[in-house]
Length: 262
Image (cartoon, rainbow, N blue to C red; front, side):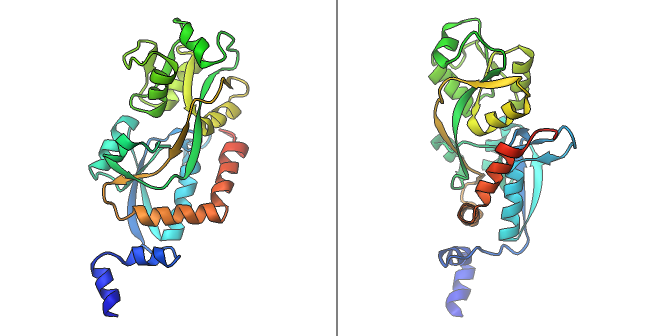
């Protein structure tokens, strides 16, 4: 009993529980999760119902049940999210965030819950280019991107000339705004991870398509303030969901079966 009491006093009980192969009980702890709600099918506002839904919302509902936490959601723009979580304004962030070393200097990441590859999404009737080299060669073509995101850097360094101020990159505050600009012809290309791209294409009824080769692989993780004691329990829940097939079921639901507005 003294050893257990000492572990509790040192904040080590969750670690001991995880090492024993059991998910910890966080006893109804409130966890404030911030998201953008602009990255289908991971998280977005359903145009049919007006409700915020998506893969990450379903995943968090599963995690909340397994860890016994009370999740409270807040919204923030992408460009402010990582800094806000790093400053401790929120307990956790989710919006298809690529795990990267520079970001890990500001926040702690969970283990990856999803792996995706970057793809080129264009209008369904696009015929002027079919790969990255052809896009780069035509100076009339424009690309949408959010500043500081993986698609932005892939566009700058893997598609264009490495100039982050290249005027062919049109910046948007949200991913959804960039996709809308693609639909209306204001830009000609949106780079996105394959999972989100599949969601948009499947819901577009031929209005969008994927072209060219995949441009890279990225792992998605949840983010936390540095040193957060939530990271280890969240990792355990993610591992549990991978093992029992929950992650696979969520992938099927949101990337194969779901239709926006359906």
